[in-house]
Structure formats: structure tokens, C-alpha cells
Amino acid sequence: MNKVFNKHKSWIGIVESFGCNKDTAKDIVQDMYVKVQVLINKGLDISYNDDDVNYYYIFRTLQSIYYNQYNKEKKVEVISLDYCEQVKQSCNLDYNEIYNDVKDILETLHWYDKKVYNLLETSTIRDLSNKTGISYHSLYNTNRKVKRVIKNKLGL
Image: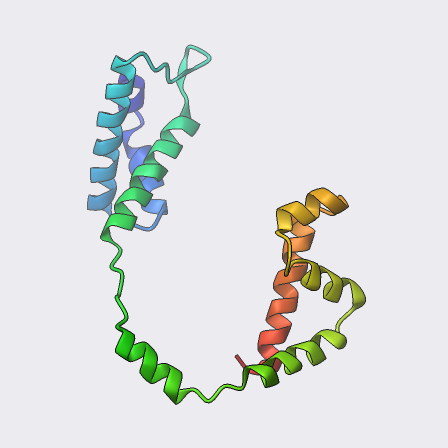
């Protein structure tokens, strides 16, 4: 555990890089020490090559604590049903017209982009990648590009 304490300033710097202030970073690092000590007492070995600390494990622990704290503090705004009704009534959207506009936009795209977008209506990117052998990232980027083009042309 002393090897972990020796890198105290590094741990604080890592947590600050997640986007929080120094005081919060210190609190998260202290929580990490407690969590790691409890796990060491249960038999966890965080050494790396018997000479150093497993930095990746510490990083992931700090990241986990940070995100747990962030999610607890995040305020969720509750939208009332009355507000939803007001928005619905104030929007005069003709969904058939929008659907036809999207179809027209798709017709102007490259055949590959159109095919990927249409296939992803009934499948996930991962499934399509596994079935076709096309990389996940290629399919993801194509789908994202098509959605961006549609949004731009619809003015959204």
C-alpha cells in the first residue's frame, strides 16, 4: 500500500483530468485508498512485476469512483405530462411528410451509405458487423454520417 501512497500527487492529477476540482479529486483519491485497502485485506494483489503498482487498476478504480459520484450528483429534471402535451400541441409536425423527406434524402446518398442506414433499422451495428465482416467502426461512422446529413438537410 505504501507504493500506492507514494504516487498520491499523480492520482490527484489523474482525477483532475476527469474534470473535477482539486478538493473533489482529493476526496476521490481518499475513497480509492479505502477501497483498495479493503480489497488488499481480502487478498487482492495490485502489484505489477513485484516491483510496482498496477497503475491501470488504480486508474480504473479512480475512474469508477468518479463516475459513481458524478451520476449521484447529476440532477435529473422531471418533465410533467402537461408540458409534454403543450409541446405536442404546439408542434405541427406532419410525420408522413418528414418520412418522405428522409426517403428523398436517402435516395441522393451513395448506395453503400443508404444500404447501411436501411440495414441498421432492423439490426444493431455489432450484429451487422459480425454478419458482413465490415468493421464496427466503419459501420458506426457511416451511420453517423448519414444521420448528420439527414439532420442538416431537414434543418434540425
